[in-house]
Structures are given as C-alpha cells and as structure tokens.
Length: 398
Image (cartoon, rainbow, N blue to C red; front, top):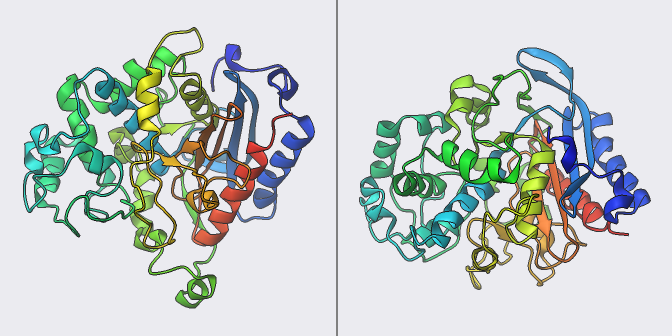
C-alpha cells in the first residue's frame, strides 16, 4: 500500500464529490455482495493523492483465505502493458529506441518467417500480425526459451496491414529490446526508472518482497455466453476471451510464473499504486516530489492515436491505440474500449482480462484503478461493469 504522504484527507480535499464517490463504491460492492465476484480493490486519485482506496470480499492469499485489504496485491493482467509501454517511452525520449526501428535490430531472433521488417511501433499498436502467438508467461524468465519463441512465431498477416488485439506476445519483443538497450532486466528497469522515482516501489513486475502472502489467487467465475448470445448482441466473430485458455490464465497463480514478471501480464500491485502511476502521467511525467520521469513531449507522442481508421475486427469500432495504450476518443464509442460514458476523449489507459480497469483522464485529473481476482467468463457483463465503474469514477469531480 502507498505510504501516507500519497493520501488525501477525504475526497473533498482533492475536489471530489462525496456523494458521487459513494455511488461508485456502492456499484463496486454490488457485484461482490451478490456473488458475481469474489473480491476486488478500487482506488480513485486526483492532484497526486489517493482520495479513495477500498477493498471488497475475500481471496486466497499465500494459501490462506482471508479478507481483501488495501495491502492485497493483484495480478494486473494486460493492464501491465501500460507499464511496459511507459518503460519503452523512457528509452524513446532518450533516443535509445526509435519507433521506426526494426525490432530485429535489437532482438535478432525475431527476424524469421517474414517478421524481419516489423517495427517497434507496430508491436506497440497491435498491428504486428502475431495476435495469438503461443507462449507461456513463465517462459519470460528463460532467455533461451523466449528467444526460441521469437524465432518460431508466424505471422497471421503482414505487419502494419491490420489491427488485431494481441493477447500478449507483441509486448515480449518490445520488452526484450528494452533489456538489450538498458542492460537491465525489465523488472529492474521498471523498479529503478519508474517505481522508485515515483515513490511507489510496490508498483512492480513480479512478486512483492514478502512473496505470495499478499497476492490474491485468480479464479474463474460465472458462465460463458454462447455463440447465439453473442450474435444477438451484434458481436462479430470470436470475442477475445474465447482465445484465452482458462488453465493458461491460472498459470499466473503459480509462483514461478509470478516471479518471471512477464511484460504483458506480470505486474502485481495494488489499485492505489496503479492510480498513482497514472497521476504521474497526468502531471506531465513528474513524480510527487517534482522529479521528472517522462517529458511532456514523450507523453504527448504516447497519447497520439496511431491506428487511424483501423478497426477492431470483433467490436467494429476504431482501434484508437497510442503507444501501447488505449485512447478513449471522441467518436462516441469510448465504452467499447473500456472507458466510461463520462470519460473525456483524451482519457488513456489499458484494461486487463477479468475486468481490470486502469486509466487517467486529463480533463479532470482523475485516475482510476479497479482490480479483481475474479475472472468472469461472461465478458459482456465484464465490459458493462468496466463501463459502469468508469462512468461513475470519471464523474466524481465536484
């Protein structure tokens, strides 16, 4: 849990409406109290301080079932991608990486099976053509094994030709390039260049210092919708969750996988730390004490929509991808991207499997984090929960 200097003396101190905050908390509690989710954690921050940090339900932590608290850590799933992306931004601002660079210049094993021309930017914006490339998250800790994966992966389409959300694989070569250029492991880079300068050392890839005692084990909940259900809802093709193997996701309950700290799903942290990470991005890249981590210029580049009119083949909406993050946009379909109906078009962040929700809104200065260890098989319900919570959170400014 973040230290006391990051906490406001109530929502009013940072200009949030207590009644609106209460409505947000009631909505978050509802799904836990009704049994749809086993537990969750929520944080709301503004002006560099956490105004709300609430926990709900119970979880198995370190082999024991107990109440979720403000210090319970969650596997952030694909919300991790924003952390890895932010690490890449640091090397981009220092000129050690360039968006147009071939990733094979840093990761030679990737230059196989037509992937040799793939750029760093294409990997970050999900146009690299490897949406379902096979791997296990624990393999990140084995350089030889991941190198073999890079060489073995085949293209689904030529790089840059189409947008298709990549479940995980595209961030592995990005992270390998970060390691090659920095001379540090990705986990070390995130710790020394992001987490510690921001004063939030619990924002990490991999396990907390005391191991698994505080980490909530993930569980699958609910019943999956049928193909007929999706057809009635107008969803085209197979939803992303259909491509997620349940046992593969539960791999993240294993110690060896958690210790690996993979670049696409290996962040293990609290909602408070995630909300503070986005506060730094909203503050022009400055830490709580004024330390400059990212420059405003690189953050502006990161938040540019780089996918143009490319559309999500499942949802039909524009992809709206910045450099490794999702941008809400002004086309009236921000809710299709995990944001609320009250988020500004400039809002940015990254969701995660099971309903993880993390974003910052430049229009209000609010950042929001919702983490859960209950992975709902009904992804329509998950999406509606994300939109409802984000809508309430984004509207909390007094």
